[in-house]
Length: 200
Image 1: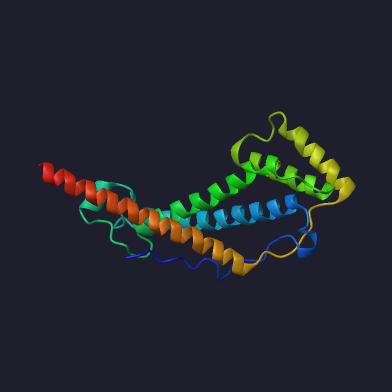
Image 2 (image 1 turned 45 degrees about the vertical axis):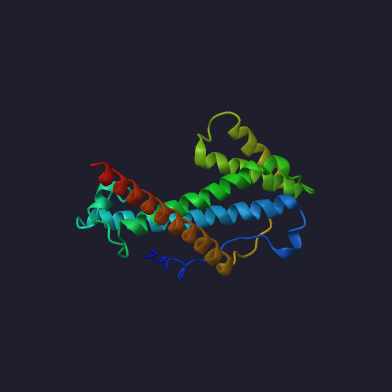
């Protein structure tokens, strides 16, 4: 049985996305995709955290969704807010964050064709550091300073609106991939348990 997709997008807000007229620079397209991936990752993180909170509050729900011995005892029924949904939400978040990291990795391969494109690339570099390191360590304050100077000269990234439809599509894509992964892992665990039982 497939885990249900959470309805967290009904109240989502509109956020900046690049306007079509400014999308001529490949670096602006890259930063737009990167911002969307990070936004979707944040949404999925919130879903995962809500499910985790429910599992901690409700002692009837097993917290260790990935514990194969609990699955073998039939303690992980796929109820909304249960361990299966938690495992799916966790994996969906990983898929979204992995997509954002792949976009970051592609920065050197994408040539900016404008000063605002250079700003977009620096935004990604500085934004990536917020996730993985200490922004007070060299060279991050220096890069942030250069970015601030460039914005003062050329202006900030163009503003627009993030598409709710695209957000839903991206969340659904990651959620469905996670459902398939969790199902495959469950099947693998079941096969291993059958093999172990046959040996005994």
